[in-house]
Length: 433
Image 1 (tube, rainbow, N blue to C red):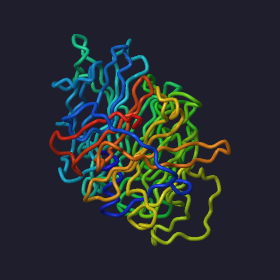
Image 2: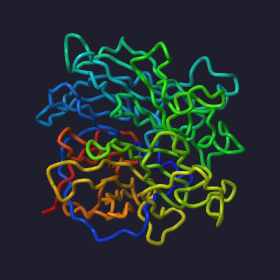
Image 3: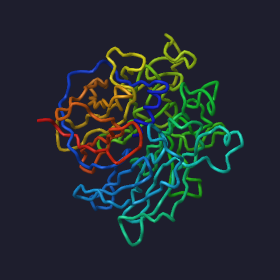
Image 4: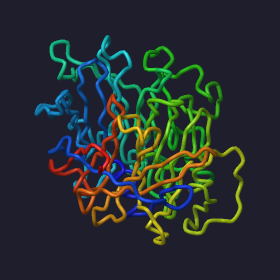
């Protein structure tokens, strides 16, 4: 739903792009096995790290749902924060309940974290109150002392609150890294071309270190005495930089993940403008390029469909995957809004180490979700294959991906363009033969 949301709005309203280095190769055949049905715009699903075998699924409209060890969806929500959200448009929206992460020591402390779009903070400056859209919040909650399937809604503690200019490009995927710190992705603030109300007109928010917009942020949730800022964040101590920034140059990071094996790298699908889409590996202090670059091409925010032949690429980290966006480049295009996924570490050994990701759809008005497999070659370069889903003619809109404790990967899908009804399904991705 976020891929739908974070990326789709751009696709429909302003255009997107998805990136992959080189053309797609031969197709891989898969099946989508229904895992959970009857949910509303599922944007994330994560294992609950307490040994219970349960998972938590978030619905964009504000509910955290529990899936038990047998794969059964509990009817009563674990947490319901619908009343805390801004109004969501049922046709299409990018706001809502956007992310969830459980503390690595959840079994001992019962703490977990959610990211959501709240009404604009009451303390916002007057100009923001007149024009800005909402405030994106990261909040801590604690499980009920009496019921492991219920959170205590009175325990909310705000970790981060960022005023947001537009309704789109929110990002706010989050997860704990191998280092035990909480990583949170943020989009550039919305609209298009990293320009307009709430954007740095000279360089864009993605390149502006003074704002948390268009960044990967990193928090130490166990250190309120430091305002949750880790001392080893790369820009701590700089007067011109927001101290929570871990990396910069993002446009609309829609779903990221840490590899649960290998080198534990951090992968992100970052929705681009009109022509290309990209997947990047994000490292400390990396500059992913937006808005100096759209994917691996130079970018001019005043002429977004015309990419200059040359530009300053000094210090930029190039994406590992880039592919054509159908909005501006219909030839050999792969979709309109990238949805980041996971490195497969499950039981099907032929897939081990492959990065499974996708695209929301090849069209806004017709569901045509795309699933891709990417492989890193011996030379360090990545190639990409389009997956053929053998058990359905049209794949629903791809909102997000998920991974269980065994390394299996799931596709979170919707049959509508917006957060409405309870018609959506989570599928497990399995080999077709």
